[in-house]
Length: 311
Image (cartoon, rainbow, N blue to C red; front, side, top):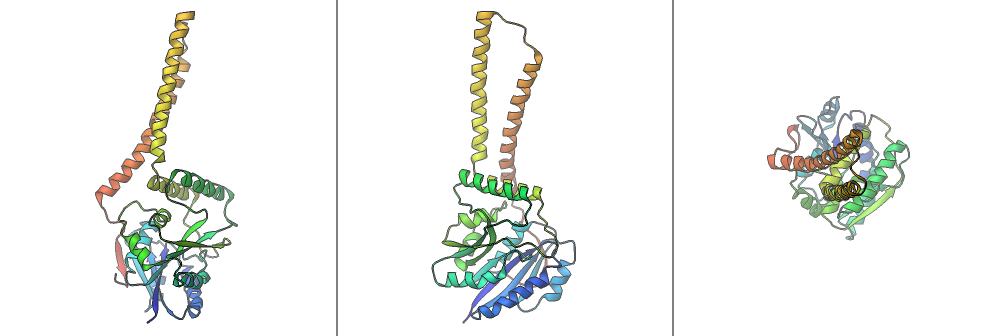
């Protein structure tokens, strides 16, 4: 009996890339004849003809889910994992072919050898990417690896092949605020990373802007580190200590040299500085409190409007 492999593919406004992606998967199928491969596309509230294309291509090995609106890539990945519970192996990857499908046979054989539970991928170059995005991406990995107990590999992609056991472990995490790169690392399991040169998108346009990636990075830091909370605490302690020394300086100066008339600009500057620090710390606390609020409400992470596959 052959093994089954499900390829989970989130889509948002990707009408131009679906057919080339399917063709690329068809090309690698003969390399793994022992595998029964199927694809599950997740239409994440696309506003173009993505859903129409998915309906046209749907068959016995190509399936789709369609959300009622855009819930984000994290929700799409979770939906894909939850609807492939009968597969022996699971691949998660993007539809734009920046995740090279030709690596799948190698990933599968590395796992079948018994040495790994997961084979992931990482880019060794960022050729074609805007320099400012590359710079901040590298800084993100440096920062989060210093403040988090979970390892984040620089250049790592969501693109990976996992065993059923690892996938089930991921599905046990029911948190609403999901950051898949961190979740994949947090569950553990033996993982090997295949390196490859960056591949530029050939069709369609990315939905990830600089600001959306920045917000995504902040979500990752807050989800897998308490360092921002400690930073707020340290800022408060340091501000208090500085104020004590400032008070002593003022008292001693008044005793030795009298109490000269102080200008109000310096007072205003101090008030603004302390007020800014307080707002900064409140913002950090608010971010964590907001995440707690979302978890407590227990709203569904996604809503499926239509599909051609059952869990």
